[in-house]
Length: 191
Image 1 (cartoon, rainbow, N blue to C red):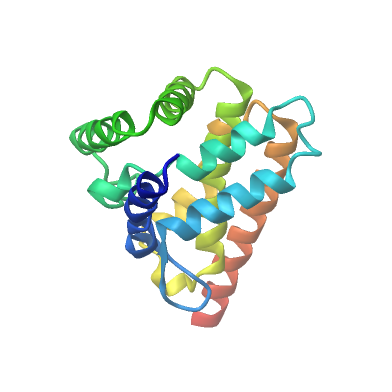
Image 2 (image 1 turned 60 degrees about the vertical axis):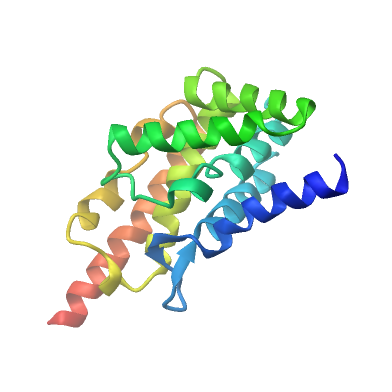
């Protein structure tokens, strides 16, 4: 990729550093989309021994690009995102991806199609980790930042996404245990 083109891509992706998500960090500030994507990719890196049959490089690439559409539309929490929001994000992302040099535009189109279809174990793993990372971050944030609906949501979110993997089911149970412990501690402190 030519230097000028690379800088154009990076300048666009930089927007994710400023785009905040619904969740807070353990330090009390709102998490950025870039931070979520980074830790999602890091999680995939550290799971390569748990999924030796999968192309983990492909999973990591999915993790890195999965929220690039939010450069154009911002982040909308999953429980508020409408079909229209998803279509606007998809349209903006498709336009941007089409503007990339041929090898990259083809690769990203292929990855996004695979991610949308959720037919490969790589795509299913990326999607499960994406949702699990969000719950992990909620567990790390101050419970005072949680919305009332999140008490139940954080106990069930991603359950259907982890069903294909015994390892992910065990991970989900451990995350659920942390969620229950956090809720119980908050209830105890209120008494």
